[in-house]
Image 1 (cartoon, rainbow, N blue to C red):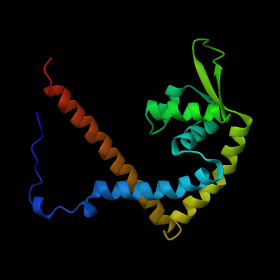
Image 2: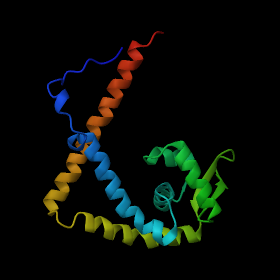
Image 3: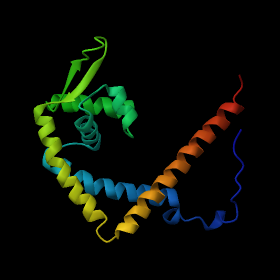
Image 4: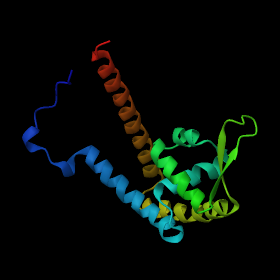
Length: 169
């Protein structure tokens, strides 16, 4: 069953450029491009590779599924990043000491060196991105982003529940 639209007053006046979800996408793309240029140009890393390294750099040893859980990436992107990082010898796969059936991923010494080298560079980009915002504005921005994210997650859960409720058993 399809949801019935309730906000029909401005159908004819719809402008994609002013549509909040579109503006968020454009915002995210611009921010991501600014940050990713640092590690892409210096080390040839993709966004997924950097995120994988950032998660492993803080957590030392995790399975691929744990990386998926801690990131905004899906299994396919994590798998590709892991393969590429292994090929570049920045990441290694070991057998878990406690559960021999499980493999864990760790950054190599070179992977850790790059990880620690990139951190101050991306922090500099982060500072440049928010340079014209006061501390209060930065805090407000983060708070608002978290609220909107929470709303989006609740909507996805709600829409998913409605879809499941309407499916035949």
